[in-house]
Length: 248
Image (cartoon, rainbow, N blue to C red; front, side, top):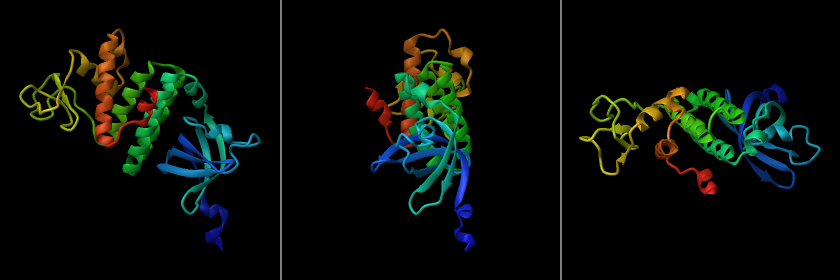
């Protein structure tokens, strides 16, 4: 019947490989973020054999044009053609690989929870992986910028120029993830994190891609800002990043 033809069960999409999991002796489960279908999990049969024609295109952080076939519990990946080979370059650098792994965890969680923003999440991850592969900036800064932008796309944008509780203008010395961002001295709840001078400005620059404002800053200040971003992301994603545990 026409409803069961291969053409009716298959579709193509541009996909970023988030992670892989071996299955049996030669197969692999591929989890990817697609441009138009959100997070898709599919089985690539025989992909681990040296004779596989598309195994290299389905490694983590590769961007590929993939053909999927609807399956019962998982899709079947029948074809894959590499488009952007970010994977090998990122995998060769430990800091870049850790940053990309954190970004992939966040992207999977955000796109699963908010299908409407999945295309925006795809574009953000695509751009961030490209920046990592090119070495445009330090990996942790690229990761921090990506996380803030991805969270903003999901509805958790931070306003760094005012207290989130009372609206008092200016950079605030406190940050509370559950409150939604910076808090002034009068509004800070228990557990508020105290920010160093310049941290709110750096976080604003990362969120908006103002890279010229991130140059020449002290390493301790950058490290502090990334810690704030990670805490904020983990709070809203409701889980800790496994990739950071593996890097410790």
